Image: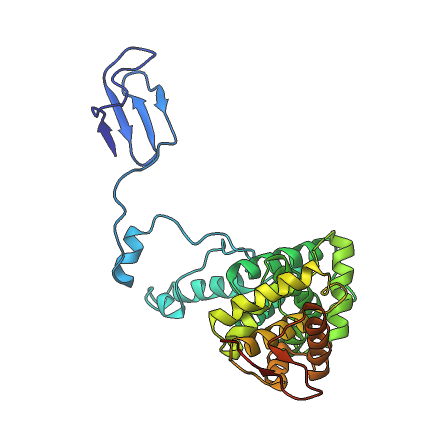
Length: 319
């Protein structure tokens, strides 16, 4: 639809023939001279009002674009589909139904082995991220790592599930929302040793360089599962900062350090938790918490704590 241009700030005449008969084509996004056909401007932005959607019936008319491209889908979300379902096809005349049923069936078929691989693997990735309550950003990064592995033919000779789990483990660490190998193993139902071996292989082949996990990344999640207050979390971060200054966390498992720091902070704030409770949440043994606890208490010299032998810690809060 062509409209005569006359608004403020827009072209008043053609720079070629000096004609004032200028139109704005809102469909093509162009400003054109009606006499000589010269395109004065193109790729114009539509600044008109975006109407709101109140229900599903009105969404089709107000939507200007489709969903964004997603690496977590085997077709990246850009493929088309014949109808919203088989019910739409039955709205057609009886003579056309068999034709569109065949088209829809062939459209759903995946021709290449790579597409079949991606469809199954990314469906498994969706299940892992859903059960681990991970964000879409982590899922996108894991899908990108897996696609790179498929492009370099690193999946051959290996379990597809182990490669997906390894990519997810790397993506979690990259986004600062780490999940332990035990958690991923429980969801993927794959031995932890196999996931760790595949993760190291992908890191070497794809050049993935990720720093060691910081115990501070685990503290908020462990504290939430233990139902600890923000005061305890703040205290735990303070203890962890002091431990890092003395290099007490070097060479120690991040989950064990985070669990021991939370255990100490809970005793200091009066929110007492047993070693067994903390160990179950952190996925470590009580012996690990006890060993980290002794190292931290002996080096940081907490006066409020008395170190028992294989007994719950008793905290005395000074007035």
